[in-house]
Amino acid sequence: MPATLLRSVSIILLLLSPMGASSIDSLNQTAHSFEFTSIEGESLPMKMFGGKAVLLVNTASRCGFTRQYDDLQTVWERYRDRGLVVLGVPSNDFGGQEPGSESEIKRFCRINFDVDFPMTSKVSVKGKHAHPLYRWAARQLGWSAKPRWNFHKYLISPNGQIVGWFSSPTSPTSKRVLRAIEAQLPSRTSGES
Image 1 (cartoon, rainbow, N blue to C red):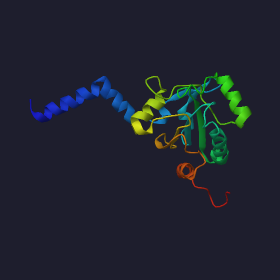
Image 2: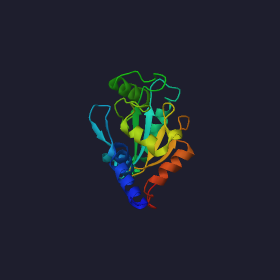
Image 3: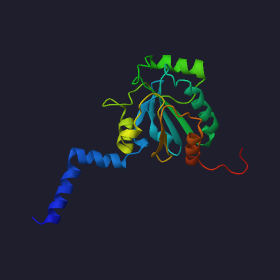
Image 4: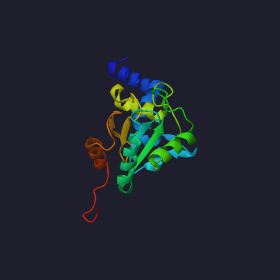
């Protein structure tokens, strides 16, 4: 069999294999390909945020970074009318710092931080049991961009691509995060403040 034909057959077999097919699927996926359940128990497809930037943050109520809820709410209030969604993703993966039920988490966030940005049900964000969006993000960005603790942040563009990530200690109101968010939002017209 000629070498070029052998290579072509090998590529076709790779594409038809389960691993090859998942690699192709992964290339075609965006964050909009995934779905969460809201903290209220309703379907929360990411495609509903198409055309908007999303700051996706794994959260926890008993963490040293929990005060970032205030900053996340500030960012949400500042940019939501310009097309940003802050999406909190409660997770008990790090230090068991989110042990509560969805209703307890929601109540805690509302009472202590006046949070009204959308939140998902509690999910895993690391390892083999991680939510599919987090597994996809790990494949897209590599080992260094995986959540290492609570309040890890992914910035998702309006077309569903991950365009940045920020480690837990990085405040949502830091200049670095705000510049990245603003780069994903439509420019303001001269009459807006």
